[in-house]
Length: 238
Image 1 (cartoon, rainbow, N blue to C red):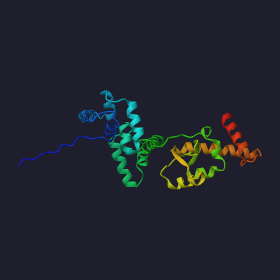
Image 2 (cartoon, rainbow, N blue to C red):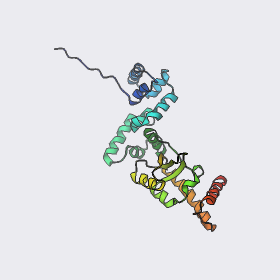
Image 3 (tube, rainbow, N blue to C red):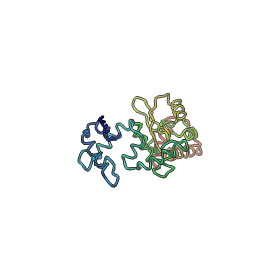
Image 4 (cartoon, rainbow, N blue to C red):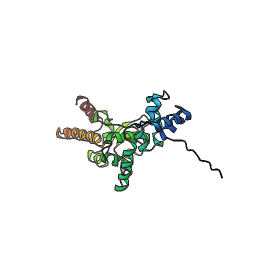
């Protein structure tokens, strides 16, 4: 009795995303994957697609930014050449062993640093990545928010849009306690961005130092508009 073998086409989450976006065709993807499978030295699919003239680096990066939420973190990091499949496998094993997040496992292995992780998490979740500095922050958003509170929940308010929505930078966007604390302050009209914890702390420290200087001068830091002007001037001079 004759048997038939089912041949499975090689697949790639990034490749399928590019096909979906119309950047490459399915035939081009399959050709690139076949070439990738025949190479003695591993090469990332995006590099092969670029060398074949099927896609540009810019188009690939734009597609990843647009649809990062549909991709797993490991796929994003591998496709960008940040880690190898072997490194991902080691991180997954460590994740299972210690019960930690994949990103934490990759950092523990020394495969990536916090900023690389957060940039890719931001891509994956479709939110901005921001490294906040005090001069970049809308001073009005800092009125009535203590440095201790911001430090406790690891956030800093950043900007307010014309419709009143506040963008808040957090170090852990999946921390529900932080989200609740932020929404309690700003009335739930918030968008979240991801930023490094050290940058958030530096911005808080700078604001705390400003408050200390105002306090030592004998001025009332709770006064509204005048102190906003003073803070703006302080940021410009600093």
